[in-house]
Length: 228
Image (cartoon, rainbow, N blue to C red; front, side):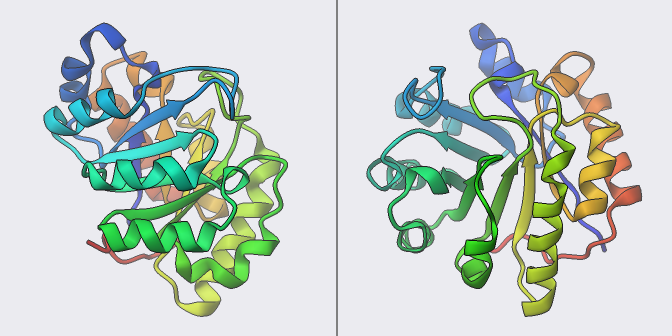
């Protein structure tokens, strides 16, 4: 059975009513939480105290995306507070494999994100060390950007590598995901999709269902369920 996951990004939610917004997306698979430090990316969102509170009230697991410097220092704390998945950027880590192992040891899924200008080839041989690879389909830092179809060759390389080695590694895309672009990403091998404005700028449950259906029709990749 093909599994296509929809992870709405609360970057597009009403920040004054985050608990209510979480309830509105309760039919999603996970909630994508963007943590930005105004250093790694030119924007500032939320930190560990707020994410910890979201963890306490969210009806679905947290998919935390750390767009911050010094990932080795901060990422483990998000795993320790109970995040289901913790994504750090390859560009912000001095030893991605060691950090992924630490996150796994704590009990979180270990995910690594790759910015548009970062080659993916150098990570193909260590793909088994990660539970998920996030291919950014926009420049990280802001919501509402246009989907970069030029990132699809990266997805295809990753998909080929995980098939070759029989790996259960999720392939996530983040940025500009709509019912149109999700088809492009699914056909390239993505199975996990971050969607912000395309979910919250309507009735979330309806939008989530529409995105999942579009991805399921065009995705042709079978994967196992969660690792934990």
